[in-house]
Image (tube, rainbow, N blue to C red):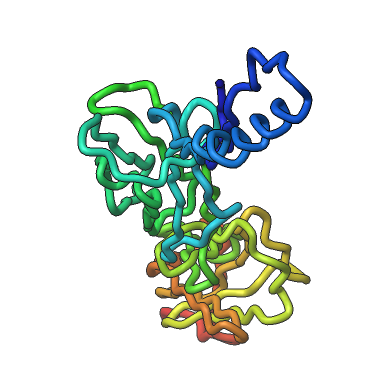
Length: 275
């Protein structure tokens, strides 16, 4: 017999051979005797177990969120697609590896873990594509692999890139970057312009050049400002729904280049007297 799927198999004895050529009555009685006493002994249940390990099947979520762990199921199968459900006393140890800045636990599969498979927990704070692979021992070529895209967490703060110095009357641009709590760029940010408030603090003064706020593109927004008063200033951006906030470094605002002179004098003078 040949059987590829694990389970129970019912076998039957061989057919009756050398039937008696005697009278019909004797033949009938002999056949009945054999059917009652011999055939049950020839029939039985055969338990077909899975074969040796051939490959692993990995089951993972379609995506994950930075800072939140996710589970990957690792199940061992034989060459005929039967799930191996019993522990094995001997065999290779397999390593579970993850790419990037992610971590995985457990990080190895022993033969004794084959009963029921293994559930690995993957955690990380970086928004990236995390690849989990299973390799045998110190081998390089993976036996199984799966990729899970990890997206940024919710909006937490803004980072502002500003020039160190500026001149009065000369506009400059500010790059506003939305980030989550783990400093990942929030590139999947929806349109939040309605809730954005922009202000400044310090001894200098600024004027917003943009008549309307530009949209965030891939988590970034470019603003334009014109310095007015000489002094020091910081720009503050806040999202009023999530309270995500960001403050720039200090900007030194200097006077504009020389443009003209203003000459002031008295309305009338007396001859021979200085003025």
